[in-house]
Every structure is written in C-alpha cells, then in structure tokens.
Length: 155
Image 1 (cartoon, rainbow, N blue to C red):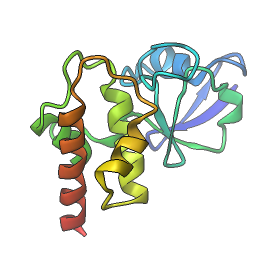
Image 2 (spheres, one colour):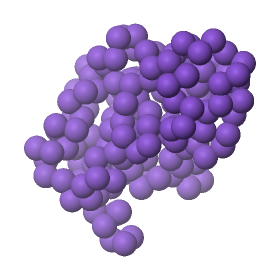
Image 3 (cartoon, rainbow, N blue to C red):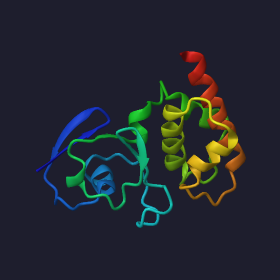
Image 4 (tube, helix red, strand yellow):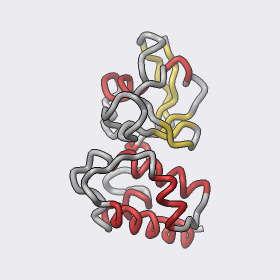
C-alpha cells in the first residue's frame, strides 16, 4: 500500500511502489489535469505541485512521495470557483490546443507563490520547462501578469 496526500485528501492505494505518480493520478484517482506527454520529464504536460514546487510526475515513483503534499490542476480550483491563476488563463484565452495548459498553470502557480510580482523575464524562465507548440506564449505571459495582479490585490 502506498499512502499519498493529493489535493488535501489522503489515499491508500494498492499500487507497485515504483509506479509513476502520473499513472496513479490518472488511472487510480481519475485526475486528468496532468497529461502524459513525453514520458521523460521534458515537456511539462504532467506537472504537479510537490510541496508547492512544480515538478513533472511522469517518472517520479509513488513510494518517494508518501510524505509530500501533491496538488494537481484539479486541486487548485473548481469550475464555480477557479484559482486566480486558472481564472486569468481563462480570461486571457491562454490556450490553443490545451495540451500544455496543465503545466503552464502549475508552473505559474508555483512561480506566483514564490514571487508574487515577477518580471516578464522571470515568468518566461519559470515557464521554460513547459513546451508549447501552438504559439499562445504572449497570452500565457499576459495571464500570469493578470494572476499576479489579482493575487497581490487580494492580500
């Protein structure tokens, strides 16, 4: 049995200890925010927050995460009450095909938790681990700026 804390809930799961977290999230917990992209931690589609840090989940074995708080896209907000980062991405229409959006939002959330007022250069640096081929980068940058402003005015 592997014990994981995902989106604030505790789960005891009967999975092999070396099962990648991404597979457990999608197959066992039906959390489909994180996507399978490259499978080698290079594209960012599978990003989750591990104790608040944006990390890929496609290769990380579950047994290494038993005392870690795991947050997925679903754990940030809900349809009726999205997280300010999610809301900004919606407002700015910062997705085209949408495959990278999980990684973009997760990486943005981690950045804004650490730095509530990032420069465009800092935003680009934080998002460089997430591959996007659609060309929605300008809208993503605007969304992160908008989320930053929303979060700072909430304080």
